[in-house]
Image 1 (cartoon, helix red, strand yellow):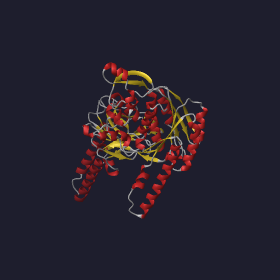
Image 2 (tube, one colour; image 1 turned 90 degrees about the vertical axis):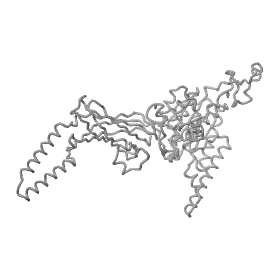
Image 3 (spheres, rainbow, N blue to C red; image 1 turned 30 degrees about the horizontal axis):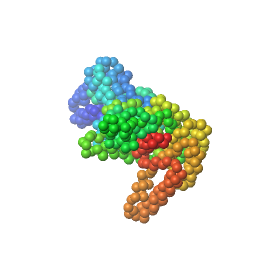
Image 4 (tube, rainbow, N blue to C red; image 1 turned 90 degrees about the horizontal axis):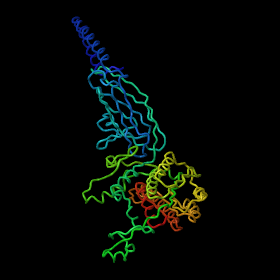
Length: 511
């Protein structure tokens, strides 16, 4: 229990009365009476106010969180008994301890202290990883307040204890207490894109997030049905005999091949530790699509991610600010949606994690559960500061004697040496499977190469950036010349671009 500033002021007034009484040698009874009354009031304030054991505070948190996306944490407080102690509200300042290094975002009105110490946005303030929120505890009611955390790495993490401080009814004392509320959470790859995909699929608006699923219609080889011709149909799909009988153009629908196999190989080596800035946040592709439709009067429609399966209302909330993720994390987020889309189309999906050795292998299987198995395999994957051994990874795959499939390798190349190693390993792989190399370009290097130099230092940086880009271009071109497919995109475009490439290859029966 601590005295408040109000009690200190009252004590100061009492001391001043004693000084005045001592100086005048009269009215001694006034400071005595004042002190007695103050003592009684202070004791009564202690007795009538709630005690620490009268409060119950707890934290509501999803034990599965999304990497790089805001996850909601709710703090709740109430009196243990329905009536509480007394009839008045108590402001309770609760301090939570999320995992270190996780950025915490509080409602601006909740943290006056944070306003002076941290940068602000329009309605929130980002603070170090300590959350302080004020909850107004009332008899017969439960009070709650919410903040968000943004996990920066995958894996297992722990929330610490909850500390609370409150003032007594008359504001003469502060009491504080601490509750052990340790909770363990797992940070998984970001599944926001999966939820967004499912929502847009139900709404028939996949183009809003940049996906071109309609290109698959009628592009298989097995006859399925006849339908009326539409302007986006190819002429070769027109069924002229049926058109002559019906007196109008009729197109033939072909069933898309199913039961195909896609194997996603993730490089967990040194180059994948580099950070990539997602400059347009989590919904870069969707934002570009929405900007293209501004003339149609539609409202901006991005998504926000929370642990578990978000509701459509959350999915339509503003997207979070740009974040920096490792290239491996960007590749993992793309893998999650890619596996989900492929599984939903009846294809078998497998996963291979490798660095200098193979660290994890998930055999290709069909069904919705396979996406969950892949996410479980990815949640603890971390990059290692070693050079990737492409030959060992591909030899491991070929030793599994899989049926012919598309092998999508997420990696990064910066020079011809790494390209030659990948090219040599891909030569043997391409005799049994189709190979596609997916890389993330470095926007910072591209910006340096395109800038207008204003000093000798700028000129040197520009020259070095152009040299790096030239080496990278030559490395990718060498692979392309030898029949290895190449997909080189920015980090914020990776997920949608990878899925679209898969859809394109599937539509051309090139898996």
